Length: 216
Image 1 (cartoon, one colour):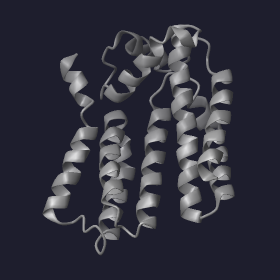
Image 2 (cartoon, helix red, strand yellow):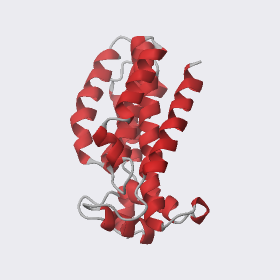
Image 3 (cartoon, rainbow, N blue to C red):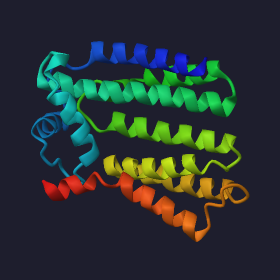
Image 4 (cartoon, helix red, strand yellow):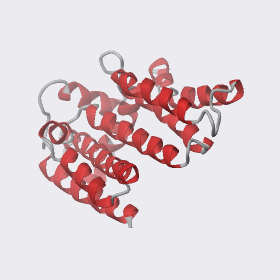
């Protein structure tokens, strides 16, 4: 079924991305980001704490082989493949068509700019991954007729994570959050104060990576 198909797409995309990842330092901010990931430093504003901590795991995982730069580049490959899988699942749910979802995920994954940023040390692949995950949660929430409170709370947490990585996510997160509140007006009733308070706490949990910048 759908889950197996999406996982197969993720595996294919990851294999291609990893094979085409830069062996060393790419252009732009890549050199800075590799160094920051390796030493757990603080990148240029806004600091990108979530990306730094996740990329650090790849940088220090010598069992992956290759240079430190290559391993950090491959972290982007991993996030980019995840974005393709989440997007495929989201479109499959929205369109109720697995073929449409897999096609969308594949076309997205191998579009030139998306592919390029999935092969180098940059924050954009993680940005795509988190937004695709949020879209999947929204699609599932819509399918539940706005009644699944757990999905709503997971979505609030993911919004926090999105903003812990790339602040331009706000242009997606705000309208999607407003839509979720509207969709739940007859279901989970997320507009009620108690529900809003819980959602806010979930969002703050997603913002927790910013504590890293204070500690560093």
